[in-house]
Each structure stands twice: as structure tokens, then as C-alpha cells.
Length: 209
Image (cartoon, rainbow, N blue to C red; front, side, top):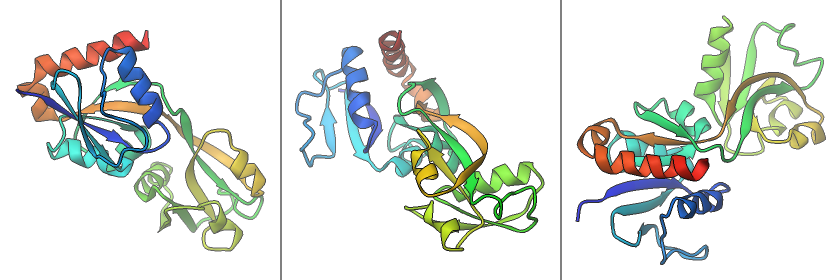
């Protein structure tokens, strides 16, 4: 049977995504949270789900290994993948911010900036729009530590409540963009499997209403 492949990001929004899929009438009965399986099929075998790291979802979709993907906007922006962004699922709402120690990191007072981030592409593009050339330091965790130990002037990171920023004595200088979980589609698949993909999208839209 012909099916569409969905790449789903592991992590904090996966549980909410499964709830949304079930509201849309899409069930994976062999899935459970402790399972180590990476591939699942829904009841009628029309949908194949693959679990991958969030950072890899845009690549799987762009390269056609998956027809559709559900992943945070942060990973879509960082990957710069050539895909269709079809739907905001309004899950995992956060925002990108520029933060650092005040006043020594104040971007208005410094010319040559070093920015630590898990998202160096997003950081670079943001400061390029402002006409500021920066050096980026790629970190995969504890980004808030970088300005505290002199590794960077500031950070570009995602925050939900801002508590971690506050607790580490940092100041948010600027909000870059709001982000949330999105549905993305491979461009070729959207042409060749349009009926199945549109049905999936419409079911999710109904579940969101």
C-alpha cells in the first residue's frame, strides 16, 4: 500500500504531537513511551512514522526520506531547508532572544561581538540584517554559561519563560522571533502525493480548531 512518511522530532513536544494526532483520528497503537523502536505505522498503514532528532527533521524532509515532518521552527530556520512550511501547530511556543551580561555585553556599546549559540546560522543572519559582523561559537548545551566565563559577549538562544536567563544573571537585550512546532512538506511529495498530504493537513487543521 502507498503511504506517506512522517518524520517526528524526539523530545519535549513529541507527547503533545501524539495527542494532536489522536485528536485528528490518527493512532499508532504499537507506540508507547518506553519503546526503542524508531518506525511505526498507523492503523490502516497509510502513514509511516519515523522518530529522528529534531535537528535532522528538515534534512529528512528536504531530501525526500520523509514526505512530511513535524519540528520546531528553530530547527527549520537553522537548517535553511528548501521545504514547504504548511501549518503552525502552536505547540512548544518559545522565542529567540539575544542575551548577555549587562552592561558589559550591551550590543549598543560593542563593535566586535562574539555570539555563542546552538543556532549559529540564525545568529549570523540576525546580526547581518543589523549590519553587524560577528564571530559565532557553536555550543550544544549550557549556552548561558558562555558570557559568564568570557567565551562570548552574548548568546542567541530560545527561551520559554526566561527563568534560566534570569537565574544566571543575564539580561535579554532583544527578541528575535517567536517560534513553535510546524508541519513541513517535501516539495516533490506535495506534487506526487498531494491527495494524501492534503488529507493529513486538513485533519490536523480540524484537530487544532
